[in-house]
Image (cartoon, rainbow, N blue to C red; front, side, top):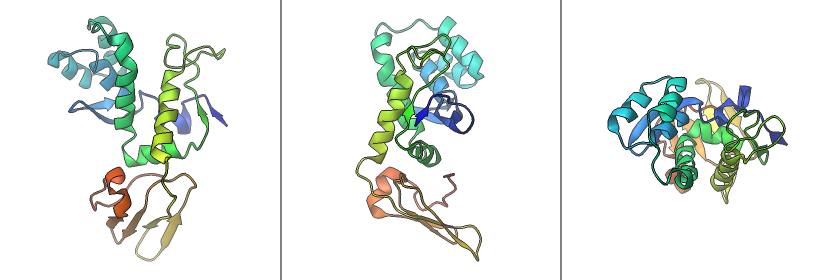
Length: 196
């Protein structure tokens, strides 16, 4: 299977997907915001990017920032770090894992074929490759467990998927995490509210 359109149910794969992303101690409203802020050490510009719309953040990154000298060689590492942070969130991690072994291609790119591919399939697709590698790391060597959750006090539901890599059981609002997965899951006995 090939996922070459990061829209609709696969919109979460986009770097611009709206979700809090922590990078270098700051929290940004999307991975794209974090990526644009990574171009500068200027705290004022970083704050401006944090509070900007997606379009404004991109414009600041293009027009107001002088790129660091090693930007072209560092940008892949920076994007990997940002995606790793983004997909450390349980609901996004599960969605990424549920793409299974699909080839991930950020398709339909008009101008930036470094990160994706254009309509003819030309481009480097570095973003898709980063997501594919991240998915493999998150799934590597971890056994599938059933995910049990109470939908209400009377009905127990069991949710399973062949690529889910966590073990969580929720009883009357208290989440218990499998001790072998605590480093990966980090729920800290909070109620599980992630989407699968």
